[in-house]
Amino acid sequence: MGSFFSLVILLALTALAPKSLAASPEGANIRAKISLYPIGGFEVTSEVLDGIGQRIGNAFSASELRVATKTLKSGMALRDQHLRERLKADEFPDITATNISAKDGSGTATLSIRGIKKLVDFKYKILSPSLAEATFALKLSDFDIKEINYKGVGVEDEVEVLVTVPYEGK
Image 1 (cartoon, one colour):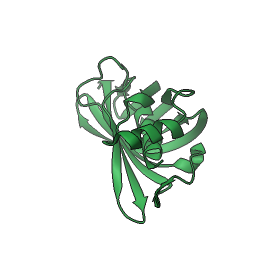
Image 2: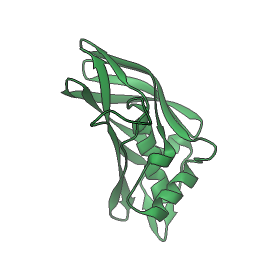
Image 3: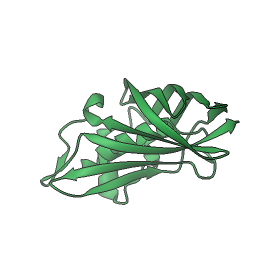
Image 4: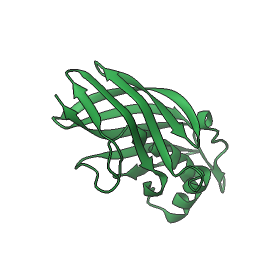
């Protein structure tokens, strides 16, 4: 169950990431940091992103970015299975970000997870001439993902997401 929460967060991050499921640009990735209670945590990651950002000066934009839920990995097969079940991966195979707009280090995007859309604020920094990193916090309960608990270990509602997004332009 905890892995499902992780996948949701990771997918949300991926929604802010670049295009091309077949071959993501070098360096593109998504990391969602999941905290557990009473103690512990893990990361959900993907290096397969669909979409690319556009940069003009200090402004960034993208019409749509997505990640396939099947590409999210936590390092544990059972947790990955639970994650896909919680994300309803058969019904909603992708997590998307649309209407992405950013300037001067911050921005907004509309995330769609499990068919539920929410506006998310994010911060970003430029890593290289072709990569930027976006960070944001995501509440799983905003996407109707609640009470994730497996054998007495639960998933915290808030997840930290980091997405390394390829971009074009200067």
